[in-house]
Length: 342
Ligand SMILES: [Zn+2]
Ligand SMILES: [Zn+2]
Image (cartoon, rainbow, N blue to C red; front, side):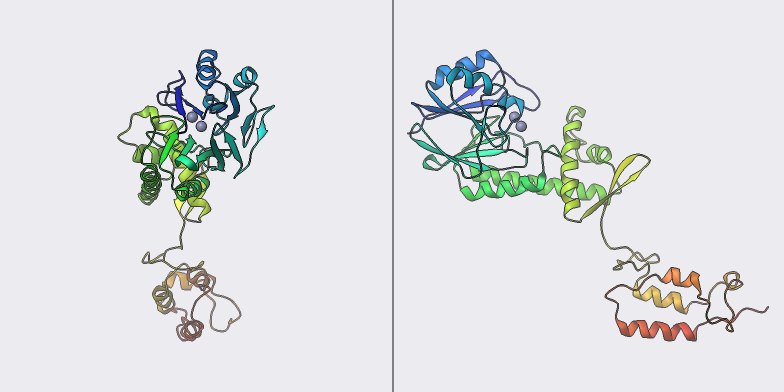
């Protein structure tokens, strides 16, 4: 039976729920996962509970998890181990195994919430210590650029593959249905992505407008955090080539990327074409407006290009049927307008 004890740090807040969970794992010696804030009273309780400490592990370097590490290390002589260690700490890498008090803790790199996020897996008891990557309630904040949603989703899959039973999170209560929680997290991100895309399709283009739309039922206090989340989704979609950003009046705007639309009927066209096949033909067959004709070349100036129509027709799509191109040139010759003499 492996000893796992939670000591709740006195730092409740918007980001930390009821406070940071400091975990003591094993006994004689024990490992401490996330000492929490630099609070001497909390750290005293941790050392008192832990007894001999052989390692101080950090899931990541955010203050609410890591700030107390230096003081704890000083008082216990235990090394600080993490992927992005503080001064004096030691770096551990993906797959690193650590034996403490009868258990083997495996460090698994799980970036997403932060670039340096790690989770610690104890196979014997199928337990996963997740830091801020998975919480007891609510969802993990992905704050770009250190937070990255593409990495995060990959890390969630990696955690799913461990098939752990219990999650010991950095905030909130123990999760006894680890797989269910991970599935719920993946589904939640999928839903948010759909909401972001729907907002864009409704013509909203700034992060703030999308936040008002998607988080309409939430109190305004969550909007700054929601804005980071929406941005994280947009950056993921941008990397996948599904949205594009542009600047207008010093504001960043976003839009759904995609093929252009026919200027006449709105049907999708590929490449840089401005009209669909049907309207390309139609444009060529149309008898141009007499006012336009005044500027057109007469038939005895064949070398001059009728720019106005070429511009309207646009470049043929790269996958255009060459047969169709033949047809176009034929039509073009046939419909070359005679200047109106009237
Ligand atoms: Zn964090
Ligand atoms: Zn945290």
